Image (cartoon, rainbow, N blue to C red; front, top):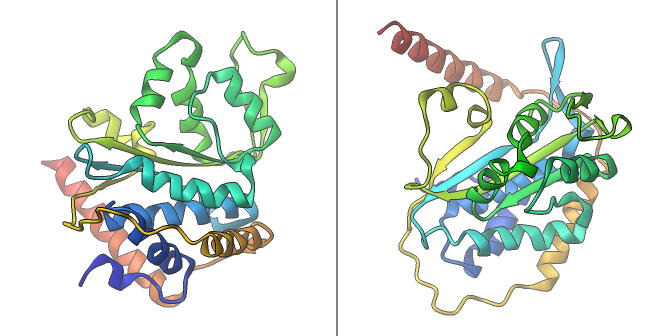
Length: 260
């Protein structure tokens, strides 16, 4: 069974996948995950799932890792960006950010999608003087706190608070650039990412199809409607059973590995 076979029929993900696939040789995983990013970013905090004493929101941090030239990172992200632009241009965060600029952006619009064709862009920025503090901020924002206040002295006190942030991140990188320590995976920034290995699927598209403006507008219209949906969601019975099974298996595996 191929990945495309498990996409729910008549869903936004299926429509997005069918639209984007003929436009680039990018692996299927990237179209599916970018469709999820569009849904997550546009739903924002309007929908949630009660979880213990708090709530889970549908924001996603994901990174696709593949060989250079295989993933068609820019082309793939540009498809998603074009659709999101038609929903609400303010949803998209600029690529290059300082801590001050990020705070300014989030005060205006706390529901954001950050798309990095090269994840190295964010890491490089965070290692520069003006970008120090970006990684801790994105780490905290993953939890979608009701209010978050930074303690940076170079930011005026009246500009240190962000209310109701909800950020999704779509990034891509090459395997040889990603060098992670065990601590990076177990917690902190990297521990919040869904990491997907993407590989060439052998599709050859010398001349891609011309994107249908009608379909772009139709996908954007769906997402625009999604921004107005509010409420709580819950597991269906089958989904709850499957989640409990997967969680229990992973938990047991993690305990066994830790004990050895």
